[in-house]
Structure formats: structure tokens, C-alpha cells
Amino acid sequence: MSPVIAAAEEKEADFSSTELRETASQYLGVRYKYGGTTTSGFDCSGFVRKVFSDFGIELPRTAALMYEVGEPVEIGEIRPGDLLFYNTSGSGISHVAIYYGEGKIIHSQTDIGVSFSDFFDQYYWFDRFVGAKRVADVELVWEKEE
Image 1: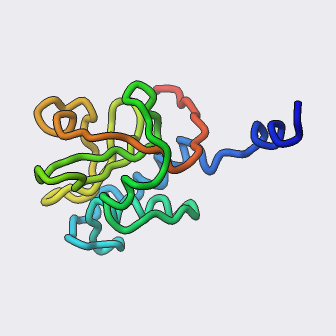
Image 2: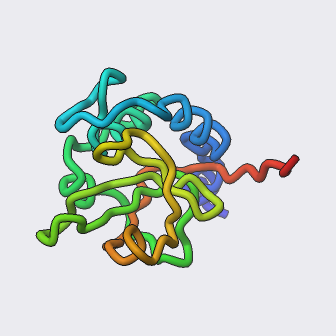
């Protein structure tokens, strides 16, 4: 095996799915604020940007610009930490969320703030889904259900 291939295989994950869940969950209940980027209020991209910044990963400011980075992910390959993009306004990418796992997304929603939604919600989120991007290497850790 060449040294380059060996080094690539040994690359450590940026963070684990457990760390992602813990970090993102600490912001549950933070109110929605248009243009918000702090714990006094987040918009969707401000929230996503904050979570990834907590891991040292800098992302662009808006959902539309975030959609331009990372590697595309097929819907059947989505895993915790992937960014999910939506067209909620009818004019392109207007919302971003983080896939939390087990069919849940975590995001900052207008009038609700940072909260969970069902990725497979046929009445709203799933119908507006545009695509997913992977911007970090997340180690999958499977927690036991209690």
C-alpha cells in the first residue's frame, strides 16, 4: 500500500455523531432571529454555522452559499452531520438543517427556534428537500436505546 493511501485511511474523523448530537442539542430552544448568529437568536444558517464552528469548521454565512460547499450525498446515504437543504420560499435554497440521525433533523425554524423535525415529514420538510452535502467526516457511533 502506498504511503498516501495509508495516510488517507488513517485520517481521524472531525468529530463523532455523539459529539454532534451533544453540541447541536445544547442550542435547543434558542429562539429564531432573522440574521441571527448567536445564542441570543439564530436563523437556520446561523445555527448550522455555530454548530460546525464549535468543531473548528468554518462554513459560509447563508444556506445558499453552504449548498455550494462539501460533497453531494445521495438521499439513501445521508448520515448524522450532513447538511440538508430546502427550498421553502419557492426560489431556490432558502433553508438548511443538520441531519441528527434516526430520521430527525435539527434546525432553527421561524417562530419556533432551534428544534427537531421529522426528515420524512411528507407534508412539509421532505417535499421541500433539495439535496444534502457532507462538509465534515463524522465518525458514526451507535448509542444503545434505553
